[in-house]
Amino acid sequence: MLLPDFQLGNGPNSNRFIEQGILTFKEACSFIQHLPYGRISDRTNNSLVLSEEKGTCSSKHGLLASLTEENNHPEIELIAAIFMMSPATHPQLTAYFQDKPFTYIPEMHCFFRYNGKRFDFTSSINRMEFIEPKLVREQRCEPHQVGEWKEMIHKEYLNKWVGRNPDLGLTFDQVWECREKCIGLLSE
Image (cartoon, rainbow, N blue to C red; front, side, top):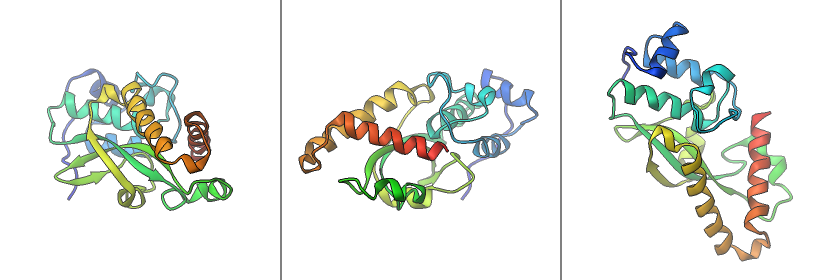
């Protein structure tokens, strides 16, 4: 099953895509999927994905979700989920995890859910097949929530995870720093 396709209508983000010759939701998803992975300069402004020509799972899906809102397609759900990031989900992190006291780090990921199926437009590589078995929590969210709210939820979960794993001998700040290093490695 595929996501529904539709013509982009009138709305701030729809108009930004139309100005670039992108007329349908399917075209928008393909365009975003092929942009490089990287953080935008202001995570509260998902439209920067277009001008900065990069984005993360959050900003890319937040921008695409604004198209579903503007074009009245609430059946396409924006999801923020926690999964266990490891070399199994991201093989490029294998060397990084080798000398760590943990084999995974709880990470958040945004994607779409439609009729019970998950769709990921973060990159041209379909990571969902690796991430899906490692999902531990999913929650519907709104496009404006993929910045600060998503980070708050992530930090709350990670803080509890550190508390449940005192044998790691690490503080929340140390684990968050390791997580940031992983994101940096994935951006290279």
